[in-house]
Amino acid sequence: MPGLLDILKCRYPVIQGPIGAINSPELIAAISNAGGYGMLALGFIRDIDEVKRLITETKKLTDKPFGANIMIINPLNEQILPILAESGIRAVTTSVGFPGRIYPLLHELGMKGLHVLLSVKHAISAVEAGADGIVAAGSEAGGLRSTGSESSTMILVPLVCDSVKVPVVAAGGIADSRGYRAAFALGAQGVQIGTRFLAASECPVHDRWKELIVNCEDGGTSLLPVDNMMMRAILTPELRAKIESPDFDIKKEFQLKNASQAWNNGDFSLVPAGAGQVSALIHDVKSVAEIINQMVS
Ligand SMILES: Cc1cc2nc3c(=O)[nH]c(=O)nc-3n(C[C@H](O)[C@H](O)[C@H](O)COP(=O)(O)O)c2cc1C
Figure 1: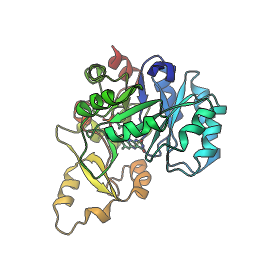
Figure 2: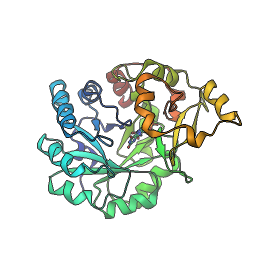
Figure 3: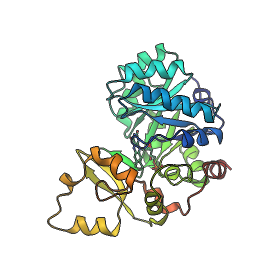
Figure 4: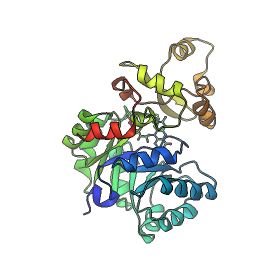
């Protein structure tokens, strides 16, 4: 059974978590150049030329391995995967949906995949469907979640490790060397990082988003309804006031289709600033190299 680093072929088992449709060749390359595994976020992409452009631009900035996240629900996956394979990408992550159809194609193309999930039940079925590894994302993580009750990283990772024989990656709540080492103690072979890389100097998101992460305190995030799902986001004083107002219908207010506009412009009245609980442990914006070096030290 290949280990995680045999699959990723990078120096450190530190994977960049996809953040919506945010794609930055500079950030991906910085993560790969620092020894981690930079990732294109292709979950929402509907433009094949843009996929090719992102790969070309990233390759100009790094000769190290990088990968891509694809969402099972993207109708273009059957066109995207051969492009990734031709460009030399050997490992991807898959998320949002049952991976049964995608893994035979992925393997035919000579690629391996890790499926991202939030429960033991889905870990077992993903491995049965062919997943070469699992990214287990605990409830403290930033990003979209289900509306059901879910386990935190501390519980989910060992449960998944006990249930499957493939490499497991821990996601959710990891920002420094303590979290990194804890992930290994729980049985994971690596980590996937979302929020800490959002507050990296190379990350192209609006400065206001980074400031919210850096200033977030203990208990400063909450799961909020967005479309039919939940999303962990930073509770600003304005957001708290809105939520407490009897006239505010939170289920109607925040829609995923507005996320890019909100996040690119730092207009968090449209969609709140997504981030994990680990924001409370992040006190500065610093370079990817500093983050990764400190994490693995
Ligand atoms: C604002 C935000 C958006 C995210 N969007 C996605 C996404 O589109 N697809 C996905 O698979 N994961 C998404 N994630 C999850 C991350 O890739 C990663 O697994 C998670 O952030 C790890 O937890 P952490 O935030 O505690 O580091 C998102 C996370 C954040 C913070």
